[in-house]
Amino acid sequence: MIEVEGLSHTYRTPDGRAVSALDNISLTVAEREFVALLGPSGCGKSTLLYLLGGFLPIERGVIRFNSTPITGPGPDRGIVFQHFALFPWKTVRGNVLYGLEKMGLPRADREARAREFIEMVGLSAFADSYPSQLSGGMKQRAAIARTLAVDPGTLLMDEPFGALDAQTRTQMQTELLRIWRRSPKAVVFVTHDVQEAVYLAERIIVMSARPGRIKAIVDAKFDREDPQLVRTQAFRDRVDEVWALVHDNTAEAR
Image (cartoon, helix red, strand yellow):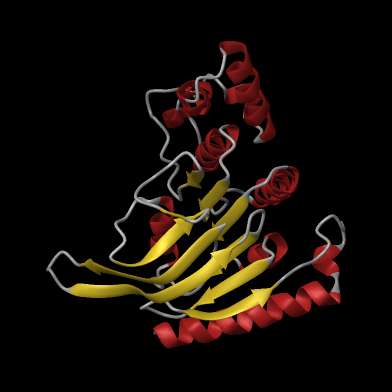
């Protein structure tokens, strides 16, 4: 369970000007629930995600994980950053093994788990390659494998599939849903892609232009095992509904 109550956040520009990024955000994310954050550029989606991860100080309001206020990053929250955040001196295998080593797993177990997730993201042939030898999409797949391998209770994902080609992006969406269904995780997923949000998330939180507020919460519960889901009228109608909300927000931000 994630609980956010009265959360506001202000940052300062290089010239010292105070800018309100989030204003009075309150929401809950239940265990195993998949929630997407949508809104115009600069509305505070990523700021909210980093506050959930404990990477920014909480100025006003409170965030609780399982009733405990967060005070910083923790192993219960795994985050996939937009810009990979891989260790450049480690291979793909080394990056995925890093968190497993910190967990103290036996060597055979962590090697097997690393192989499983490297294969899942399609990087088996590049397991011994360094980040500098990978494309942007391959780097992001390695970062996703590293985060998923340690099996955190909550996944925080900042546009994780934005750098992937269309086919790989679709495959990773399917894999993410499979992992989410088989293990007790809450997922908070930032994306700018309305169709991706409707396909993945049970609830979509549409945020207003800066300062970010919650403008609408849209339910999007579908049978995601239906291979024809994206072609159904109900799915298309929900995409249109969310798109209209996001479009209004984008116009407000101009």
